[in-house]
Structures are given as C-alpha cells and as structure tokens.
Length: 203
Image 1 (cartoon, rainbow, N blue to C red):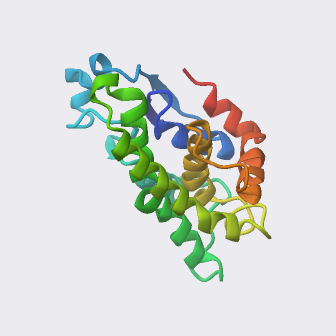
Image 2 (image 1 turned 90 degrees about the vertical axis):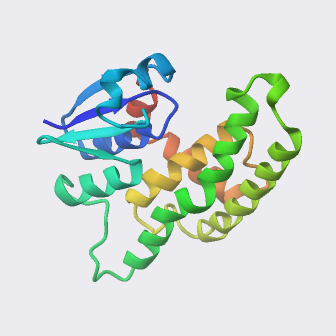
Image 3 (image 1 turned 90 degrees about the horizontal axis):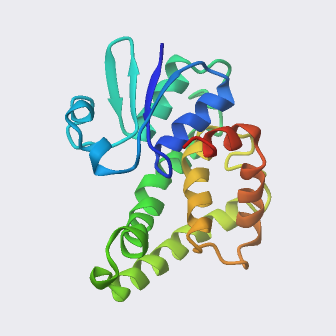
C-alpha cells in the first residue's frame, strides 16, 4: 500500500491530487504544518530534514514532490498523464514539469516566508518586492503557451500537477494579475477538476 505523509498548504497537495486523478488507493498520514509534527523524531526517520511530502511504497521512502509524481506515473500510472518518450510532446512535458521548481517555486518560497512565516519585524519589503517581480516574470511564458491550449501540453498531464499547483498557489498569494487572461482561465480550469477539490480539502 502506498502511504503519503502529508501536511496541508504544501507540495504534498500535488501528490494527493495525482492520487485522486488516477483513482489510486493510498493511506494518508496527515500532519500539521508545524515543527512539532514535521521535526518530530518519528518524521525525521522518514526525512532527515523534516520535510514533506514523503511517499512510502513497499518499504522504500521517496522525498521531493517532483520525484514522487514521476515515480507514481512510472510505477502506478493506471492509464497515463505522462507522454511516452517517443511522443512529440515529451520534451515540452519535461520542460514544464521542471519549470515549476526551477523558475516558479524559488520566488514563491521567498514570498511565503516574507508574508506568512516570518514575524512582521523580520520581514524585508525589498526582498519581498524582488521575489514578486521575479515570480511575475516567471509566469509570463505560461500566458503565451496557454493562449491556445487548455493545458500545458494540450492534454492534462503530470506537468499540470506540478506547475498547475504552483500557479494556483501563486494566485492565492495575489501574484497572478488580472491581465494574465489565459493563465487565469487555466487556473480556473484546474480548480474545477474534481480531483483538485479532493486534494485541496485535505486538512
């Protein structure tokens, strides 16, 4: 049985979303996004830095949401969400799959730290402003690619799980302008998917 160690409002939502899209059974270990849970001795046995998500499958533990999503699609894909390496869209699939952590999430992490995690007296408005500008630039290529597609490579795929989740979170942080019409429409489509609602509701 697959086991997902999960905390809400984190990258673990991606994995729960994927499970729901694929209708894969799994066990959920729901934790609070709090040091008492994530830095506990029990969880540090799963991840030495006390991070989530962690996936357990047949005695092995896998970290990093992208690695977990890729692993599930390779080993438990139950019908798809990843093009074959011979498919013309495979290169773009990989590009957008990794664009998430390479270009979008670093700035988003900084924004979260300087708006939510740090106490007000330690927040730096200059650092926050720089991160907001970088995130806005990183989202611009998505407006172009989504101008004639419903999803990143045409059909819904694992790239939409990875990067789509980041786009949803970016908008919730107020970082997706109304002028990004195609991107906002894409986020709307993602948020109407039943599997997204399942994952987003886990607390």
